[in-house]
Image (cartoon, rainbow, N blue to C red):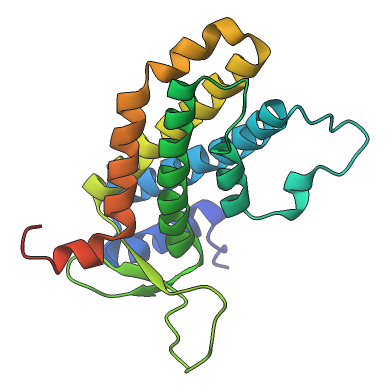
Length: 206
């Protein structure tokens, strides 16, 4: 009697198929890292927003429980008297980076996969059946290099919200957030490239 393959063996066969689609182990590793770090960012962002707003959430349903990530990011960049001006600039860079990176992440996680070149592309809300969607269509190109940009940008966003929360807890630490302004601008640039890569590739100067 032939024994059934173990889940490890079945998984290995599935991974081999995924590799044949154009996703080698190095790319899958970066997929996993990006999704993991983005999840860390979202959870830390929520705590950061509570601190920035002075929310007392014990025993209540926080406003973040019923609002999308885009509204969280808008709130991150809201002007507040206790946030120094140079730090507010950093938070606004982070908001822009976060919105572009969220779209990129959503296209990968929720989008359709299409064969394009050496590696598939993901498109969210492609409207294949003529349906009308509330959210606009957008795509996500992937490669080791592009996913490295996503991982780097998401990690920087984690640093931003951790330092912003620390600034709320101890105002003497706000300069630490201001000091990473150049890193956050780089993350904003990278996230913008990831989100708008198709448009950029069609531009003669890209």
